Length: 202
Image 1 (cartoon, rainbow, N blue to C red):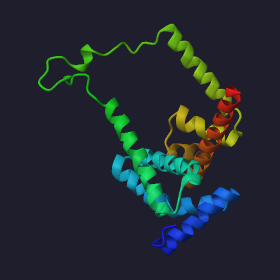
Image 2: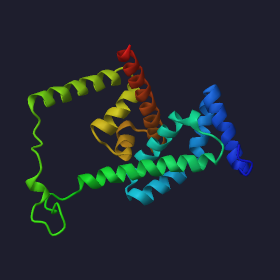
Image 3: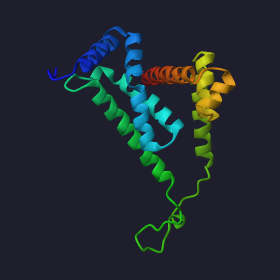
Image 4: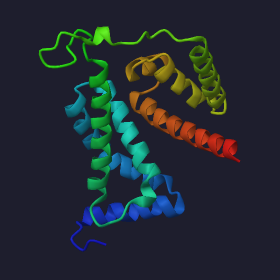
């Protein structure tokens, strides 16, 4: 253990130990409460969009909590968490940037050929349509294994693409409750998916 850790960092490490060894939900909640605002502000500075920043904040905690057993106190938990969040934000921006490439941009500097001359048709062939339909059926099947509360959250956010505010208004719930339940829903869905993959590999 790093002897130069601050008192706050030592407290965080104790919470990490409780979360990992005892599956202490209060420890998880305390860690999230301590850093969610800071992570959100960092993500917002990167993406300049409230909803994207909220999603990236939830994803950062999800990734960190799944990897929590790998954390070592050679540096502060906050440093480790912010690195995960920042890397996740960079990946998000990289993917978004690729989507925003103009098809009229030239492939090479001062080149005559543009992207539009080299793009393949986006139309799905019959096999690709079948695969996509099967994936949707599998995802629906996984969602049906969640309780109604969490299934509805996932459907509204990721299938209907509603904002947190819209979900809050539609379900008559505080935005904080919507965020917390969505975080839990994604965790449960990940667990179901992991068990499904493990079962298929046997």
